[in-house]
Length: 454
Image (cartoon, rainbow, N blue to C red; front, side):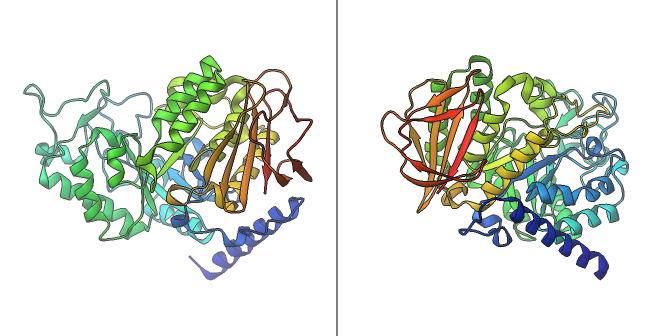
């Protein structure tokens, strides 16, 4: 990359940071935006990208051209759904699933060239963002390059080799006990670290793969470069290998809330999430949507109705690393099958959603109480006068984030009934200050939310 391009990107990044500071009605003094801690401090926001659906060109160049917007949105990590060529034999849908990998060391030609990908990674790095790759270690496409010469890499079942696992008819099961396959898998992962300098991996169906495979793989891959590993799973035992997991159990709790709207049960699930000792020193990813949920269960609006925004606030403030799925930040209500040629509808963008997500990302990235893993702040839940209301604080030292949520379809006045938050707080979303305890209560709009910072 030439010097002029680097200088231009650095200048743009500085302008973005300055513009964000100018828009706020008060100045943060604890962690300035220009001093956001590195990933080891666990204060990042992750953004999931389907490269095909993201831009009209279906390619890396289209994504790279939009990096300034993502930077302004407050994104730290770009997780790219699999960028490899998709299997053609027994493929699912028109395009085939990106999780049906044909060659672990190749790039889907529809997305561009290796030089295009290098440019995307380099530009993201200059702008202070990370690139994580989606990695499928449980299975491959039927026509994966390994099949012809290494059929022994694949598992046998009932005398059949290879075979499709479960209901995934477009893929075939790998044999994770095969030593040569383990070496080949590690070699493929190392390729992306050495050739493209990526920053992390999200591992598909991680709980389906034996733990000893992951132990050996991580030990080997770490020899090249230590990056962050995110498991698409919820088995605490696997956290000896992974840095973050998917918290599917909490996602299930949110799904149940979408149908039952039982706030006391939701509060209990938040307590369970927060008090799980297996994650004392590890992180979890929290979300209200992702590619699987969106494709198979509908958009977040289909699942949560008018409670999308209060749940978005919850996902950014209750626990660890929040996820944004491409299009979520503009209020897109479309369900997208990732095996079909479906595009994100970027226009019109709902400014209410854009503005809220910008504020939420900045809150996450600047407040010590919202850090992840061993650095996370405590959770304090405040009893209220109404079962449709949820009030809680995240607390670390002198930093406190007070969150008030109304899940009712009508306005409510929230009153604290037992313990009370105290002191002078900034009204993060509206500006100004508020003294607590609030004797007359706090008014919340229907499906409303408020955030106060001390």
